[in-house]
Length: 234
Image 1 (tube, rainbow, N blue to C red):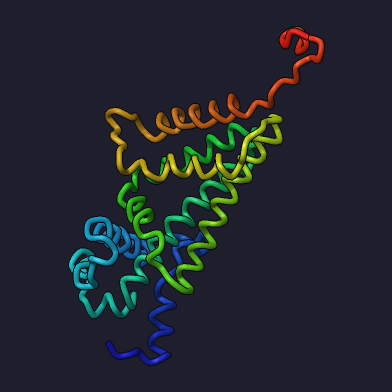
Image 2: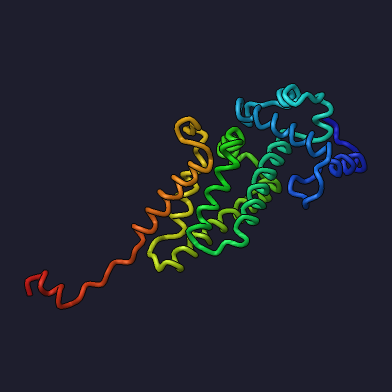
């Protein structure tokens, strides 16, 4: 496809709002962009990123092929916008929910609930994010990696706060990554009629995670030397 003149390309980019841009009122264009990203997510979920073509995306979104190229350049641009919208939405909601909560265990429960509430309603999006984790390269890939790093660091910080606050002995990194391993694959097994809604599922997962950490992370009790000698027969 021929390269667009610089002035036209600039106009095109300026008309694609960042999904995370401020808290401005949602416009008609924002709503249309959201619909396009939803349709693109369905296509990537069904065919995979490599298997999907711009023609597939054109049919799904209801845009002409020329129009799709005009606004989005490539399917990589659409995947980038899907990932950026998802992660920035989750991050913004999480930060707002954590703002006035100080209890370490409650903050971890909020993290779990925030994650599940979004992805229980967007399971196709979770599948796309999980399967296409390394599909974005160069600048777009680095930008998404930076957002994901921030999300991971928040989770790691919550685990470290719990460890220090409760005087526990566990590896915060292992705990954080184990939690991600639990919540990121729900699209493979989640059944609302069996597992309940996001709130019920978050409560169960929170109990499992926190129960394991608190019980398994309790520092070993120091045995009195005299009692130990009796046990050893000395």
